[in-house]
Image 1: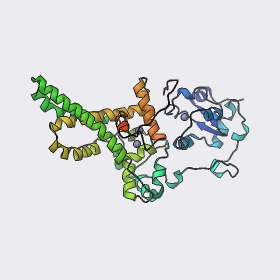
Image 2 (image 1 turned 30 degrees about the vertical axis):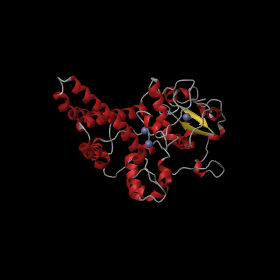
Image 3 (image 1 turned 60 degrees about the horizontal axis):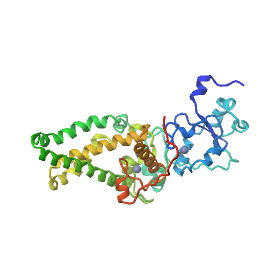
Image 4 (image 1 turned 180 degrees about the vertical axis):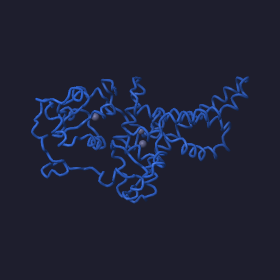
Length: 348
Ligand SMILES: [Zn+2]
Ligand SMILES: [Zn+2]
Ligand SMILES: [Zn+2]
């Protein structure tokens, strides 16, 4: 047997599922069900284990297709080192879409768009099935615009958010807090307003996520609404593993903050302190959202929220809108009840 080079073989994590090979090397750390649940599956047929595991959602099954190994390539590279399976069928098998005898249908909707071209202008062409398409996640690079200078603006590294907003948060609260510095009771009042701002944010987080980001789309929703939806939140559901399309970009964020703040500033007491608290709440939310996607939490509360948010992504897209906490999901009855686990999930 001529095995592939040792280091090469060790780096790859390849499994077989229903006569098809999947390369999970990149995905195993992102697997919403944890990495420890995949233990011992490398280079084995996982079909039986998969059937026994808690059921995977349609979105999860759709995502799985992304990791399929082209059968011809697979026959070349992996047939010799695959343990305990019939190697016959991985050899010279035509691609699934061309295989007339294969009863597994190719349910992919990705032929509707061209992933090598700018995506945003194409959304207008798929409005009749956009809602279904956008909730089927993929794991591939997304290009929104053709010209590089526009494309560049659509990418936001996570650290840009605190860099931009922390000075704003301080600036908003500074004046009132410094003039109340000697007065303990006034300081307490301002702290109360600051916390009120944080609470206000949590409600806003829920409101935006539920009624704006997940605005009801129908098959007759126009191209403008679909494109708008894709821009603000649809893309995060379509490519949930794109780290540069996860946090809210600061400039549109500032525009949105201004739109919401301006009318409120006339009716609120200490509006700038409340604004400061709301922005602080927002900052914690966005950092937490990033952490839930990429972090490896060990604290129970964070593990819970990570599972909770992944359930929102992959199985209950019409509930579980809270990201920093399930508070408003409880109030508005959209809470997701998670299964109790007898083991702790890990992601590294
Ligand atoms: Zn899984
Ligand atoms: Zn969402
Ligand atoms: Zn998310």
